[in-house]
Image (cartoon, rainbow, N blue to C red; front, side):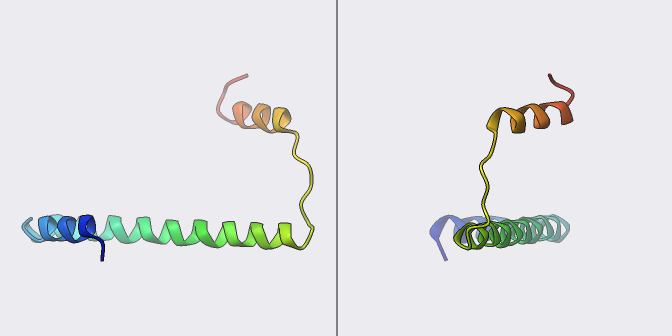
Length: 72
């Protein structure tokens, strides 16, 4: 385990049980999100390796993303 994680765990161990539980749940949720992201990235890379990629119109993509956030 890396030193920063060891130090964080040692610090959390000094907190009340309820805080430890809350931090533990949040950390596990974060790890789950990272794993899901890694799986999605791996799927995308495999798709590109199979030649399934297509050109991206970045301007159209940005317009679409901005419209979804109420910007134009």
